[in-house]
Image (cartoon, rainbow, N blue to C red):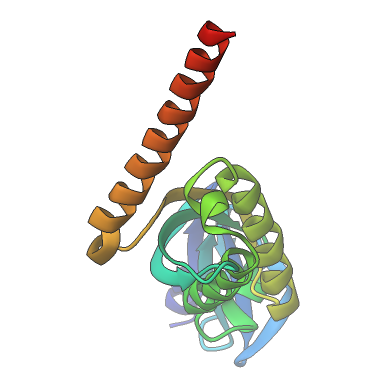
Length: 190
């Protein structure tokens, strides 16, 4: 019986995993490293966490910009688990916390931007702002997650008003074309 108890306590962790150790249900500060390990059954439980896999989360929502326009924004976040103990213990559902923090960070950044920034040239700067704000939130929550990249995939007007938005864009292009034609005619006359 002693030999069976001893043999049953062996476990292995892959190279990309770290084990969070619970002794009598209380988390231990040490983390089990990869390889063949032994734990006393009934005393220690080990929860493996993959710390090298790049995970991703997607988010899409309608948001209000600073200039009172509604935009449809979608983005993808890639992240790693860098603190396995915090990831397992501090927050009940780290992925849900990530999604809620992402929603908050995105709304804050989009709400402080204009529609032209969201759908045009300001998207890269917005993605960096969202990444910084999101990492601040996740660090404050103690999730053990480190954000590696935020990609702002799409920023566009809502589908319901896409036709009207296209008409406005066409009118702006026509205006610019007419102004250029008028300047060319004025130069020709002079």
